[in-house]
Image 1 (cartoon, helix red, strand yellow):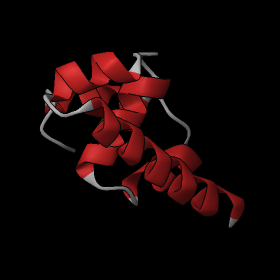
Image 2 (cartoon, rainbow, N blue to C red; image 1 turned 90 degrees about the horizontal axis):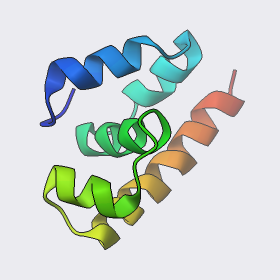
Image 3 (cartoon, rainbow, N blue to C red; image 1 turned 180 degrees about the vertical axis):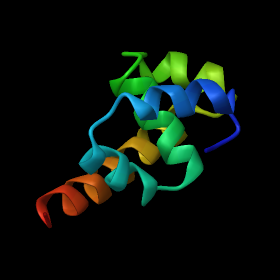
Image 4 (tube, rainbow, N blue to C red; image 1 turned 45 degrees about the vertical axis):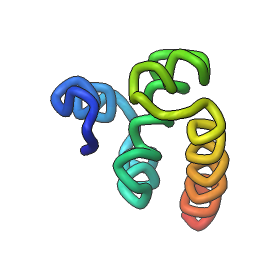
Length: 77
């Protein structure tokens, strides 16, 4: 997966359902990192920005695009 401690992100992803992993795999690495930190680790956008060394607006954008893509992927099943 992405730049963030790869093994840690991979471990988080393994805990998800097959459908969720499939939807997650359609995202960019940065989007995956943001989604897992937000919804698995329950981090705030400010925390995610600090962890990933990106701006908070960038985190918001990554999450917004990722949620839309995942919603499409999950409703297609």
